[in-house]
Length: 321
Figure 1 (tube, rainbow, N blue to C red):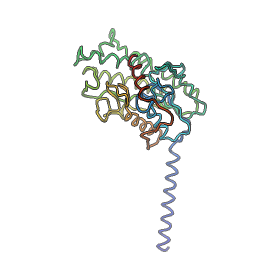
Figure 2: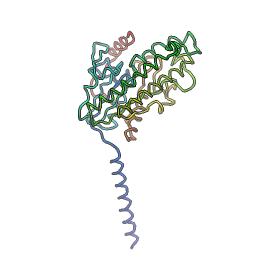
Figure 3: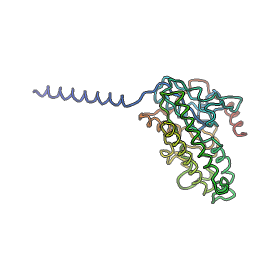
Figure 4: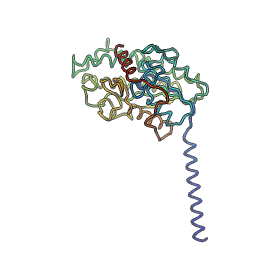
């Protein structure tokens, strides 16, 4: 065989291998066309630019992780009905939101042909998240180096927050089962909550908890994520862990933080909620769980969004409670 024939044969073999490899990779990456996102404010992304108007009170960002994931996956149909303040009851019941709005039951978005669903829910059930961020900072001055928040929520030797979280597990399981009933062919991902507090150290100017309540806050979040993970398993869904990969991106991490601290930034994030960087990080984590290595980091609005005046009115309404 001449040298030319040897080289030609080698090129054919290599080309065939590359083609086969590319085909295998394409076959291994699942494709989704009809995506529905359900969830609470850790899904909707309050005050991350830009806020949608449908309804504005849900504080649903055009750059939350569902929007970024939809763009990453190039889905043909994308519906995000996540809403700030939602709990598991709002899957089947409508939710009143600030500025005279109503969010329809989130399950209304599900269809028989929906093939991908993400749901991030559970933190608001029995007011767990609201009780923590609404109570613990105000207790810091009473015992800055102790754990006054833990003491406050411990009644007759029982941690009332942990008791609430134990009940939440069954509620989230029911949510997953309800998704499967309405969208029986869908891949269902249950999204965990990213890390809020650092594993060590404190940053009271950002996260104004007493020193001893930092590990307590972390223990509550870990318990919540365990409950959500167990619910996913019980309901036949896939749990996506965002807590572990967010190490080093807690509220105390400065420019690397995925979570906003106590200060309200009208054009970036609501207190104690994800920043855009957090949504970008979570979208990449979820995409990876679906076998997709690429990720989109920004999405341009395709419909009118809230202006400064509307954002200010919304912020005032939320802060008044």
